[in-house]
View: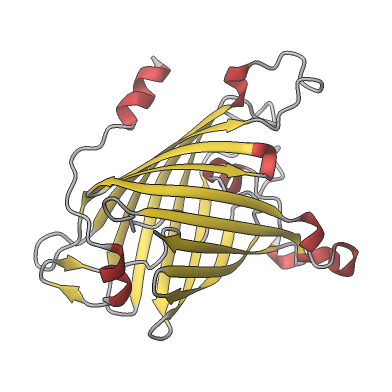
Length: 282
């Protein structure tokens, strides 16, 4: 029954058109045909934005997250403890993206599906709505430490609805209701099925610069957990076919289940991670 429900959650309601990537990079107005350049990057910081890769285009995202800056020179402000994620996203049709990635954090492989449900249009519909689903395989789990470990325990799933609105030429906001499921959880009191709400936004600082921020609110975290809600702040820089994102966050994991369920840093203690996302379109 659980598998059937997951399959249902993977099916979108309907799909609308996707504009060309370079058009979105160079356009910033809300037109009669729809809001463009709501977000310049495929991610706000940690959370997915409502932006999609255009049809028949390939996007490579290289993400790097250093260790905590709290340890100072002992870890060279986190450079000694860096993790990397490489993600390929392809536009299989207008409004449909598929992706595959590998992260050195817990050696996670991930497959993703992102699809447009509806677009913000002036005097018609006030929001962009995009669906996002992932399946993850945690190959870092060690059978020597987990005697009863089976392949099924390595699997995790995510279902998100991304709802954004371009308020004006400078400000875009997004809310992200999220369901995620880990077949294996580190804390036995923690439910395998977890719920969260993400909020995020982008504020344009100049022609090619913007300030981005997102925050995740975990709704059923067990009281025995020491994990934190993820808070991330960053700067986006667009240069033609590139989008370069620099940010600080209290979560080192770059996969949704990881940064929502296993963020360990604390902003008030300076226990935060510097990182970047570099996106290149082909």
